[in-house]
Length: 435
Image 1 (tube, rainbow, N blue to C red):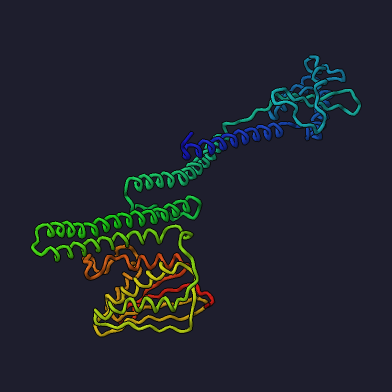
Image 2 (image 1 turned 120 degrees about the horizontal axis):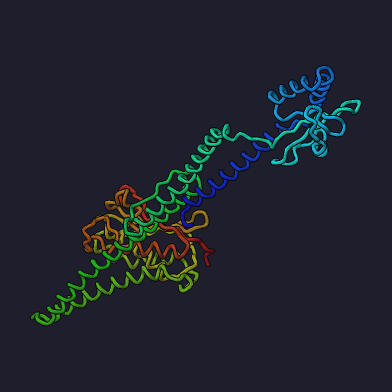
């Protein structure tokens, strides 16, 4: 049986049926015990005295009237016999009933066998015999109660089955829709039990998968878009080399497009390598302040070309442990990104200081900054605040993504916030003792 709904109903109704059988059995036992008059031997003795008095004073006629009155008023057949069991009214031998007599206070011995009570007179001359038939239980009188109980329990069982099976069926439909490509579908369960937790776990999983699939699709679209333009320009440059009058200019244009394409492929490979096996990186101990000075000097020419300056402020010497070249490229990406957006005659500030056992690097420009809603996204591959995707204004959208992965590879953190004006990018790295 594969249906949880059917299983719950089956087991619930099985429990209900067993309970009903037990209830009926208990009713029969109670009725039988009520019919057993073994606990009323005092009353039986009084009946014997009255029967004896009727027989001795009025003979068989008065005894017959007394027994007939008792038989109509009380259950069972009543007989007055002598000590040997001979019926004083009819002369019938009832000695066999004397042998079946129940001891005082004993329970009924069998549901289907007649029950016999016998009382003896004090002088031993008479026996008073009461013969009961098998106990009769009037189940029809209990039938409305049985139906009521059965209906109430059946309703509770049905509600239980529905409350468990229905959300599971809804979850199955949601999973089918999600598997069919509807990434926005969610369970949105408000239940507080295990089924609700299962639904919320699915929602969390679906959210992560949807984010990953969306990012993957965007990454493929961005890569295809980024490669299409340099490949087209490269094809045009190659044709220009073949037909241009000034072949040196054409060759220079061709080399420039080849270099752009090489830089793009290298950046893509760098993103992939930054997320690779950390153990493959070359780990060494090096001075972070010296590394920053080297990066600033390498970027100074680019800053001068854009009409801005770059300033470094470093405190005491600091050392970190990691891959020097990967970290150099990461910091350089951040600095070059700041230079790209710095206004003319402004400064790009690079600061290094120690705080709470970590080295903190901050790079600030005085440019337009980033909209607040875009701040969490600037470290994503190919993300640009300007959706025009013009590489002349925003690069390829990989610099900060590469830097973020490189810093993470060194167990550091990287954040960005608007400095009003400009953008400040902060890098925090575990600090080692300077050599």
